[in-house]
Length: 119
Image (cartoon, rainbow, N blue to C red; front, side, top):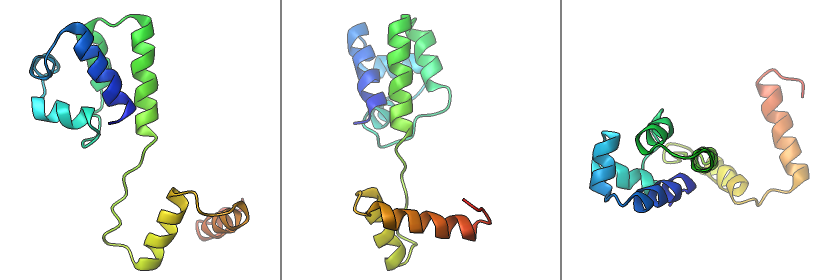
C-alpha cells in the first residue's frame, strides 16, 4: 500500500464511507479506488484536489494528503521485460542500493557525456 493509499483509506474510514461510497463521491469505480489505495494503479491527476473538495478536508488533512501524494509519486515503476540482461542487472543494483558512490559517479559521468552534458 502506498502512502497516498494509506491516507486515502484513513479519510474514507474516518468519514464512515465504504469503498463503494467513496468511489461514487469521487466518480470512479470501487475496484479502481481499491487499486489506487493498494498501489496497483497510478493516482490520476487531480485526484488529491477532488478528495479535498469532496471531503472538505482541514488544512492539516490537506497537508497530510499532499505529503502522501509526493511520497507516493517518488516511486517509479519500470518495465524491465524489454531490456537486456545487463541493463536489468544495473537498474536492479541501483534500485537496491548495491552500487558504491565511486561507481555511481562514473555511471553519472557516462550518462551525462552520452546526453551531451558536461557535469
